[in-house]
Length: 78
Image 1 (tube, rainbow, N blue to C red):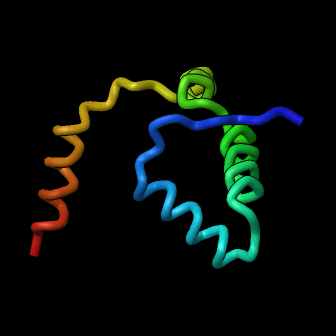
Image 2: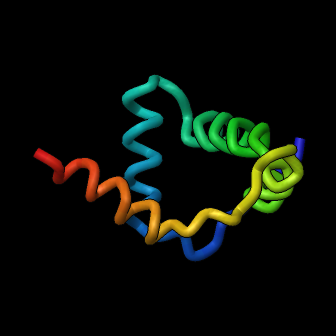
């Protein structure tokens, strides 16, 4: 099994990880390994954006400010 060393980890992050590991009754290594596995099971932002853009009928021709103005106008009606 490989070893991973993280340099310049902020003290507050290390403390938060250590505290969570203690609360969950696990080691810091087991906690971080579980977190990394969970993160890597998800698509990267680039992969996710590519999949969203590849979906049929998902145009980006929406004028967001105009749409917000319309929604606000409807909500402000008595």
